[in-house]
Length: 117
Image (cartoon, rainbow, N blue to C red; front, side):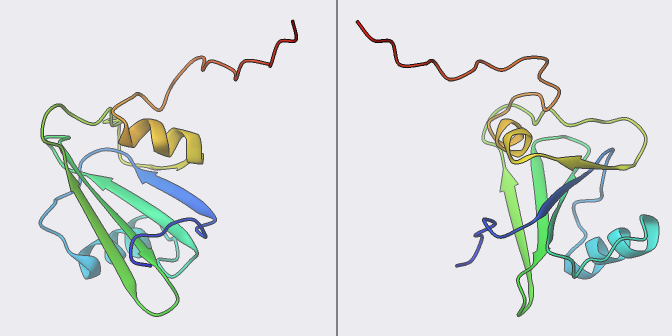
């Protein structure tokens, strides 16, 4: 299914700003040439532009590259804008990012235990 990332083993966030005019080949070049990583790996690579209101995600699904693009209607992504580097995200941090939350949550609520009365 197009956009199904359930089988992706790693999620990488490229911090800083990326030129959102770049397509698959340009983003592959960043992954390969700047960070010496394999764009064909079973991984999702996330990029964000200067305005932080849009992100691109790139991954290889065994038959070709999938490029996902999300533009927020309102607000901005809580994107780390420090020097360009690659950071590994957990699936929870990925969900937080897409929900507009900071990936640097210091604490998350634990699921409540079922109480017996």
